[in-house]
Length: 509
Image (cartoon, rainbow, N blue to C red; front, side, top):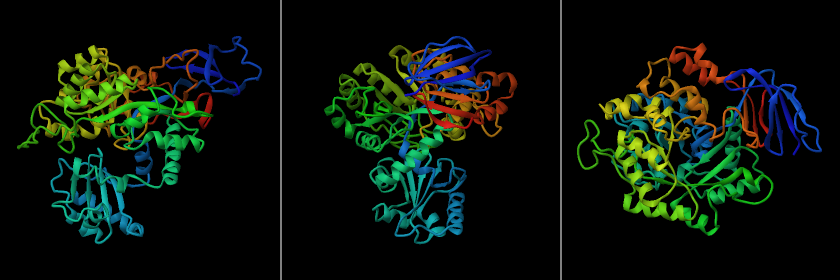
């Protein structure tokens, strides 16, 4: 691999210190003042690229994605703006009016609806009125439910349903009909999504796709994968194969060229549901909800979760436990304590304050998706009244010393780290006033939570996974004092180039 010298660069927060950055053998070999003598890059002369004063930061990671689903969603009908069932149906009608309907019984698939506070109910009849015999299946924004027309239900193998809204365990068994495509198609879409992510400075993702990720990523590696770094998660139903292969956290899934790009990731378990489906498991009831499920739903009891986590831990795997409601988070921490496992709670959207301290004491990472706070602020105020001061409590987690890892949960939110950073820093979107601004974190903290533990000043010997930015994000608060303006500036951050292991994956210099 040839060496690369990035000249006339600047480090984040250090505009007064232009540097040269030498990359060699996939690593950062040196960071020195501009024009200083550099270590010899070996037998091969270094290629030189003048960055003209741009800012270099460690490449960004998305700590929670469903990569194949995100790649597919990028091709689907976006109904996330719908404010009612009628509005969503109108978006479906508009799509059918603009383009010929799918052929061969293939459904029109949309994504992003959030129905919990709609004034009308999402029913099959509402979609039937605009789609007729065309199968329509809409996926909710949190992927925990789906809404289908009558023909869409038939496509999913469901002869009858009282409403057409499939929630949690009703939806999950039917989801493979929608969320899977031919391998060649999926792989091409994922490669395209990886290129788009690289254009936003992304060098790696944790892929928690609900699939046999060991088989999937070995196939992609054999096909010449050369995109992002990937940590491939494993679900319980596929855990035996990972254990039989002797794979531990961070092990390459295959041998050969490029194999170090894809490594073994954590065991993923979903312990509860989601806010928008009223299934996140909480200590208090949802406002206006009664009955046995008024507190949400627990998918995996602690006496089942802890032994599963202990099994994974004994085999050298980390654990990533989905928990959104405050009671689910408390139980997830109980399971970490009982099992001795290491890893993360995914989402951690509503926490008791005593559980923030438990995160820190147990060394559990809070893997959070700040853009969800912007998506959920209104529904949270309605369904969790009086509790939202401890929803998405990033500042409290940070102050307690809890490790933070920012992500998107793509396709629930876009795979764009600057979107997550903007939400974490400002708690503002679309010009709205910040939501619980006391839970904001600063730009440095958000950036540090987005670079996979690498120092912002670039460490010699670290992987040559870098993003080259047209602006220094640490300088933005000084020029955008209004939260809404700062949010817009962060979301619009221009990425001039991205490198993985010293190789350009995006180049717009």
